[in-house]
Amino acid sequence: MILKTIVNWMKTDQSSTLCQLGGAGVGKTMLAWLLYSQAARFSYQVGGYFFCKHNDERKNNPRNIVSTLASQLASQFPVFLEHLVALKTDYDEKLAVNPDLIPLLDNSESFKLLIVDGLHKIKLSIDKTLLLIIDALDECGKQGDLNRQYLLTTIGEDCKNLPSNIRLFVTSRPESDIVSILEKIDTKELSTSDYFNLLDIKIFVGEMLRCLDFDSKNQRHLSFINKIVDASEGVFVFAALACKEIAEVFVQKDLTPDHEEVDGLIERLVQDGGGLDGIYQPLFQRVYDGAT
Image (cartoon, helix red, strand yellow):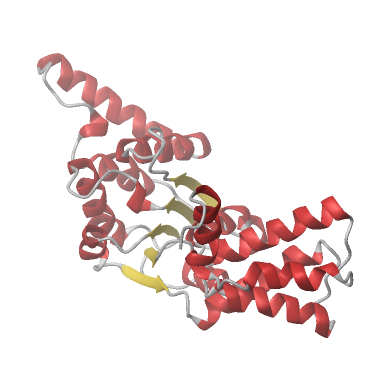
């Protein structure tokens, strides 16, 4: 349901940039991945994507967002490649005169110069929509970093005026610097208790368990699905890990949904409560014997 809401945003005359905020584990990255993977189904084109990751040097540097998106766009649109070549030529000429000139990717306006200005040169037919995706922006750089601040400022200011059929979708945790700068654009917060969030989790669990022959029209099977959804407390990661564990046990023991062991398996997964506590408490207890 949330996915369809975002697809509808892409096809209307609303703001060109949407920032989806949400806490840990609510499914922001899954939402970004679905937007990437379902492009053909919903008839739009992904021009570029970047999935940030705090513990990966290749994926936690704002410079790499710019260079990656630029490379992806240049590989699809010759006019964008020409834009980059012209920028590089102009930069090299200035560098010959001033050897101390800062690199293009370190320029405070690098995202605007390389990405935004280049996007304005791409001509798409009126029925085409081009989407850029940046996931987990909060994991790129640290609060106070200049490059992160430059990137946020460009997204908040210059990306508001992208061509009408070019869209930028960003996900992030609601960190203070991100919220304060991006409040100028269309921002939505994904709450764990949101009705559509819970509905999406139910659809996800139903689809995952359907691969194990669970039938959502079967009342007993449906009760298993509902227990997992309720225990998730709206945290997508809990539902995903629960489905993964069920699948592993089914394979190991060659179970079917109607096997008597399934009741105990489901109860064990949900008995200690769900959400983030349900994910991490068992892990802590294994590592720190007897921990509360």
